[in-house]
Length: 165
Image 1 (spheres, helix red, strand yellow):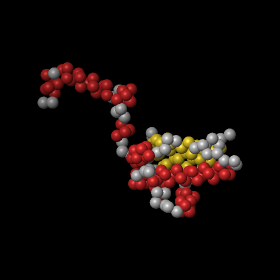
Image 2: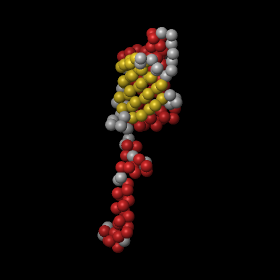
Image 3: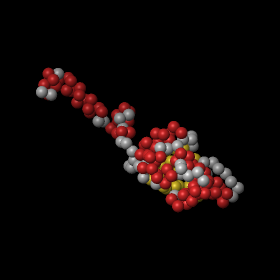
Image 4: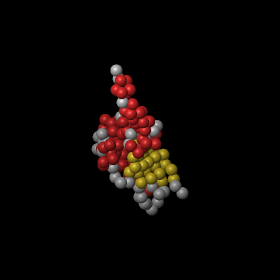
């Protein structure tokens, strides 16, 4: 019964087959915007929808391709200081401020479901790379006292320093 119109109109059958071949071509998927990744629901993408509207121009955000619950944020910073110790303190303070900004401007439920968050703070002298769970970053939105924020950062965040020569 379904095949009868296709046999009656063979041009329709050939047209449907050619449309299927054209849409399944990997080169055309990028041109037509038919990426299946956009249709996959994930917490990382939900965070980026709101964050992309509010993020500063120095931020670059993306979700890792292989795992949709791996959020990567890169921030370029040009802080300068007289000595390295003052620069290090200023960068750690800036890192805490940026993470708090992230927590306040992202949906708390979705940020809490992000498995891994990688936050990179780039400076001409030092790069700070932070790995954290999304639930730990989401908790920063509720902390108002500076000492509580500092204690939470010390207990839950892993920071790696890389010096640039």
